[in-house]
Every structure is written in structure tokens, then in C-alpha cells.
Image (cartoon, rainbow, N blue to C red; front, side, top):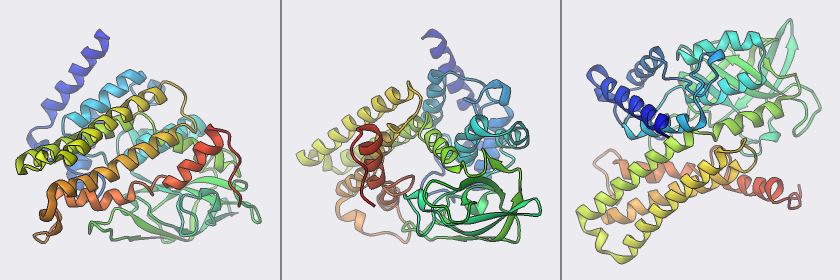
Length: 380
């Protein structure tokens, strides 16, 4: 434990020293519904992190990471969030694709892509959801065929976070004609900067546009840029989803705590804290947040599996309720704007998506019922 506390002090000290000067202004910027904030400055900050070895801290040293233990990764993500450091711009590459390549990729794919992810020289997006296949990922219809040593892609993805700034996309596509559901899918790595790729930002309730539609019209990628064997994409995609709900969720919860603290402070300032019903709801939110942390720590002690669906169900519902609670604390003042949303209005509106993206609540409940509790599968 002494080693962990020493490491905590090292992380906290580095962050305090470096979130200054040219980077002082990025504190607290970015995140869900706010990815437009100071993007270039946050990208520069993240490259500064990389230069001092603070990206990809959980990757094995052989692949350019620090090889931190689970406990040390928890410390890093907690201190990063607690420092007020800005939201990361390369989360999809570092936390999702990188571990997927380490687990399933070829040596050549790792040599090609991992150094650029670690240095934040290439940004990634995730090509999973489609208009007819959101949380039902097995229903994807985007197709790819081999032609002259390349995969040729056609189809549409939607709700693709940060596609408008991404250099590459990891795409789940159907590569076996006539296949259905989980069979015949492949996990392809596709460059975004080419004539066959069109990105259209989607304007959200918050007025921002970090989600996008992505159209593939004879887009191309090399034949060897398939992760795992052709047709084995479902297994690889499920591996990516397990990594998505890993240790970084603890840092996310620090952000949640900061939001809750801000709402409590607002309630004290306005006197809303004197309402016994609101006070009880704020207390319950604090207790539930501690439950979220306990569950995440318990889950992370084991290899990720279908149980991670419980964590997604818990945090998304909690955060959505927090947005509603913020509006009850604000009262009538929360109903008007001065032309721009305040942080609590943005929280309410963007958190409506929490129970949908990354797997809707309905899908998470099915996963828990079928794969954790062993109940009969839902009729199709």
C-alpha cells in the first residue's frame, strides 16, 4: 500500500506541475456533450502526456505502456480526474483498440498502430452502430468484399463518436454474403481520409455534434487490416466491448462525484437543500455513487465478462437521474437560458443518451438475464 501511496503522490505532483502555463486553461474542459471545447489544446495536452509516458499506462511495457498493475491504473485514473485535467481525446484508441490489438492483432498490426496510438499521433473512432442495428450489434449490414488485395466497404454507421476528427475507424462489417447474426462478420481497420468515406455530424439536444453518421461508398482498406480471422469479427468486437468497461470507469466516477458535489453546492447556495425530499435524494445519490465504485472495483478484480453489463446499467441510470436531480435543485431557473445552456442543463440533456449509447438498458438487461443468470433467451 505504501508503494501505491507513493505512486499516487507522483501522479498528483506531475499533474499539478504540468496543468499550468500553456495548459492551465484546459482544466475541466471536454467530455460528453462538450467534446467541442478547446479540442486542439486538449490534443496538445494529450501529446504532452505521451511525451512523459502518461498515456497507455496499463499496456504491457513490451507494447509501449507502463505495465501498471490494476491498483496503479486505478490510482492514475482517479488522480487524473481529481486534478481537473481535461477529458481525453484518444480514449477510443488507447482504451479500446489498443488492448484489442494487443489481444487479437498480428505483430505487424501492433507495430503499425500501437506506437501512433501511444503518441496520440492517430485518433480512432468506432464503427459499430447502424440505423438498423444499434444495440443489436449482430444485425449489422455494412458489407465488405475482397477485391484486388483490399477490402471494399459499403454501408452506413451512426452515432459514431468523434468520427469528424478521427484518422482511422475500427469497423464491424459483414464479409460473408448470405451470413446472418453473429456469423460472417469481420473487424476491419479503415482509414477515414479517403474519397469513399463521408462524415456527417449529428446535432444533439445540447447543440453540439460529437456523434456522427459515417457513410462507406466503396471505401477501401488493405486485406491484412482485419483483426483476427475473417468471419471472426464478433469475438473480437465483444473483446473490445469488455475493454470499454474497464478501469477508466473509475475515473469517470470521479467526474460524477465532482458533478454531484457541484449540485449539492448549488442546493446550499439557493436554499434548496432545506427541502427534506431533495436532501434525501441528494443523500441517496451519494450512497449510490459509492455502490458504483464498490461494484466497479469488484468487477475489475476478475477478468471482464458479461457481468460488466451490470456496471453499465448502474452508472448510466445513476447519471441520467443526476441530470434530473440537478434540474429539481435549480427549480424554475433551470427552465430558461441566456442563449446558451449552463452546465446543469447540458447534463440533463446529454445524460438522456447515457442509457442508450454503449448498449441500451434493454440490451444490458438481456445480457444479464441470459449470460449471467442463465435465463432462457428472448424469443426473436
